[in-house]
Length: 212
Image 1 (cartoon, helix red, strand yellow):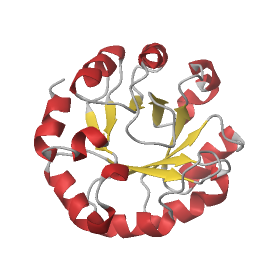
Image 2 (cartoon, rainbow, N blue to C red):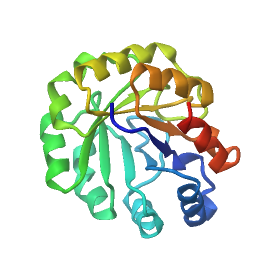
Image 3 (cartoon, helix red, strand yellow):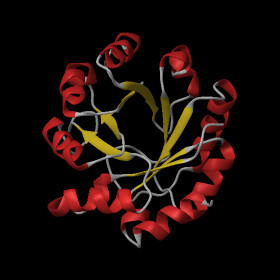
């Protein structure tokens, strides 16, 4: 299994101080910076777009892991690539032609990934597992922070790890010290945590996830 990585979600940071927050969370031990992009169509909320990603990139030294909760992500690949995204993960449930969109992401110089909603089987992503750098399994419903961890998705994590032993498998939603242990045991190696990390001492919270 690939090395464990902690990816704090900037959705939970203080946006009035986002540059300071990025520096602080990196100093606390973050491996990736998770950026939640919501289009107010695929999910109800509207969040970060390419201009904010570009602003984060000016400060960040860690890779930007951009999770596109978008109905038509293929329309914005070039914009996010130019803004400085290092990863672009798209939902298998979106309207985009998956294979073509993953290829376009890689052509733009960005690492492509796929995302599964809690009720979506791994089978939906299997045809493209050899075309992606990361598989993100949602352990809450996308679109809102602070939700309770959905334990049944650990079966998808286990299946994904069996199918792709060397793939980065990310889990997002309701991650804390306890659920991190369960996720790692199932095969996840990239942990996204927003509320848990940003609601306490950043370094201590990240350390607690790392030792889980």
